[in-house]
Image (cartoon, rainbow, N blue to C red; front, side):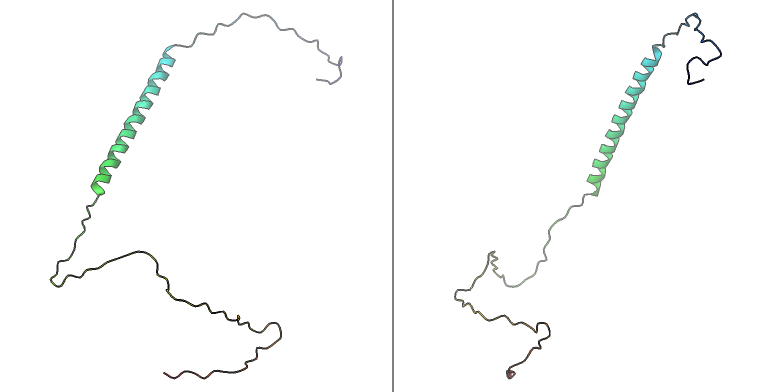
Length: 121
């Protein structure tokens, strides 16, 4: 085909009228089949879910163990114990302020001015 109009050697053909072909209607049994397949899938899914839930409940009941608190019986004196919660604070206190010790900075060395004597126990 040429991009320029009028350079086509053959004249354009007109389509010939033909006889229409009758398309047979779709059988109705396929729609009924789809409904039955869908119902079967829903019923199968419901049955599978029921079986899964029933088995998981049965297994959880079988796996449960009963834990009983026990105590060892001994003879002896009875001790009374009192347990409390809370916090403790000092009745008398004193705040002590001291300068913060700093090490040598940069190129300046740390000079010790005096040493204390060690305590003897």
